[in-house]
Image (cartoon, rainbow, N blue to C red; front, side, top):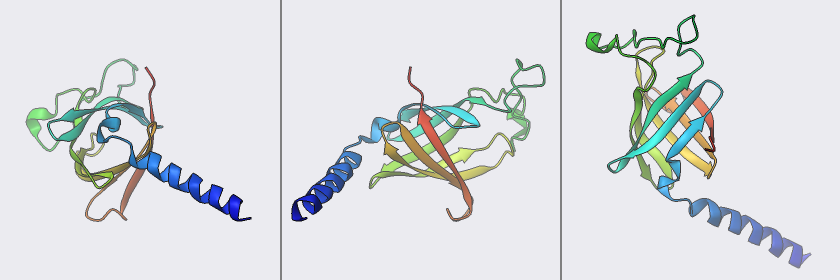
Length: 145
């Protein structure tokens, strides 16, 4: 009984140790969820993300990228949604990513963003206005090249 309890405790400790050993730069790469595909890259001391694909990124012809027509800046409304750097200032602190900004091409609003790497290939982010409790969570899988 004591041996099996010791084995279980050691297993949990080793899992926790693995999770803590992930480098902050592990977030760099291409990630996909059901509705979006993004590329996260290092930008100075923080991380940013570029929109590669979204389920509503193209016009009805399926080829022409939609414009950023909901952008609050009139000068930017004619740019393509595809390739927009829409995640900025995402900083790594105490094992999670915080203080990021997420620009939504769907509504033209900017939201706060935080996230955590569950492991090397699974990322969970939450975009929100005001408090994290009132927001939306996205579960991302790393895209293997």
